Image (spheres, one colour):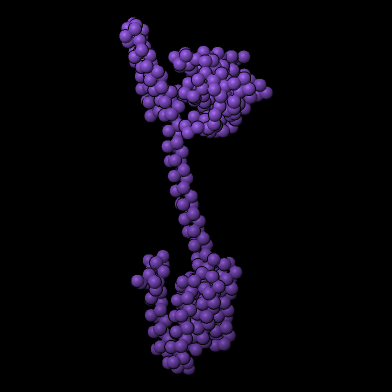
Length: 373
């Protein structure tokens, strides 16, 4: 309930100070024998409190109006009681600093200085006199104080925005990491498990017809499971390097198991690639092979590697049923995402001869090859 009378964000730092200053102001005003009289003093105190309450809750034009009326009440007290009352204007200087308008702060700061000057002129007590020497630095402090508070509040606001941005970045990084893990599981373990499934089906067919062949298939299944375990360890330890030659060799074995003939055309010596680039391209090839096995119904597949105009190209074509769309899997989006990350491009289109054609193009850069370990 009390939060409706006093802003929650100011209770900790300002409530006690405001109460102390208010009590001292009331005591200073009511014990004086000024010509204002009791009712005049009470009316000015009421104006002070109303102005203070409005300025406490407002940040726009009403804040400036409240500050000016509050300073006017204090200035009148200063004329009739003495310039010492002007020091209570620090309350409005503090509230003025929370304004969102620099113009309002400038006007209010000018009003603070003006109140001191008017009181000194009307009472004929110059601020530079020895007896009033304390009021000149107090006036300067009160005039500058709103600017200090404004800078402080601005920094606080910017820090809040920065914290919020950092929180959003952290969430984004977490989401990206989840997507990366899902993609890696799909691209690595997915293909290996599919090979285990195919080998298991073959072993089931051979178990009654040719036990020796069934044993060979089971032996290959065992080797493949070891590969799967190795892939799991690599994913956990973030050992992500995959070489293109090993991936092409793996693709040939995989397509052979699926009954698809693979032809690799390497027109020239491959360029020098970084470990990241080579790994990304290898995983794109892996995903393309997985899609061919799952969806293409192809009998033949060709992979052509070439370097042209400082661009390394990998072109994969099959004679299957053709490209039918994006689908619901992670394959095609992951290929596009990887090539975009490398600064390259990818195209997945129906081939004029039938089947699907995948083109990966990577601009070549001069660099030393990283340590694959």
